[in-house]
Image 1: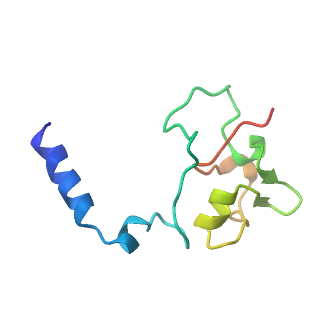
Image 2: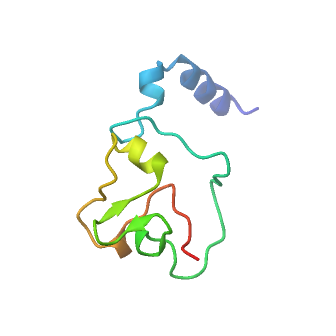
Length: 93
């Protein structure tokens, strides 16, 4: 393993649990077991506007992992749904 990766791995192991879970939200960052770090998507589908979890009327996300990460609140940032997307995106079918 390259030395740089070993150093990064060591630093990660030294993080406290609180630091590990700090991923820009108010709650724990957790991904579902079927999450993929990268995926092929259909052109023009990668936004909250095209996600199966979006609640357009309330401008919020119904994904339990997003809600947990956002401190128990499903509210999305106050921007157009076409301009935002979370790590928990799943295409609306």
